[in-house]
Amino acid sequence: MTLATMVLPSPVGDLTLVASDHGLVAVLWPDDYPGRVRLEASTQQPDHPVLAQAASQLDDYFNGTRRSFDLPLDFRGTAFQQRVWAALLAIPYGETRSYGEIAAAIGQPTASRAVGAANGRNPISIIAPCHRVVGSNGALTGFAGGLETKIWLLDHERG
Image: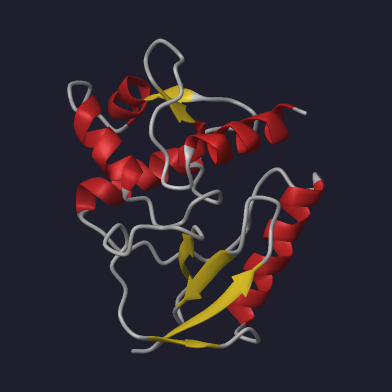
């Protein structure tokens, strides 16, 4: 199956949106490491319905008029990664959680490092808000879009 893609200009750089017939597969950063999210072949299709819906909702988010997303998502990863990514979806707008809190939320309280690794491979950035995950002491840690972007996103949500 060929995936559909489009590039969305945003305040944090040009985001590449990727969709399948089942939902949004990825939101990729301008300088994303190619191996972070593994995808099959894709073609530019900005008129793809999932991409159009995702672009519209992300525009609303960046304009400050959207706090949650309502999109079909097509997460691709291990069962553990998918549990972590589902837990990201439960972090409220403007709030943060630690890796340990995510580990506890998925029933594996000693797996905070594995949660960190899964968080780093989150393919659907912003929508599955991995930017809302911080160290146990509140410190900002690694982020695929860069720490400057993580700070921007958190500040944007805090108003």
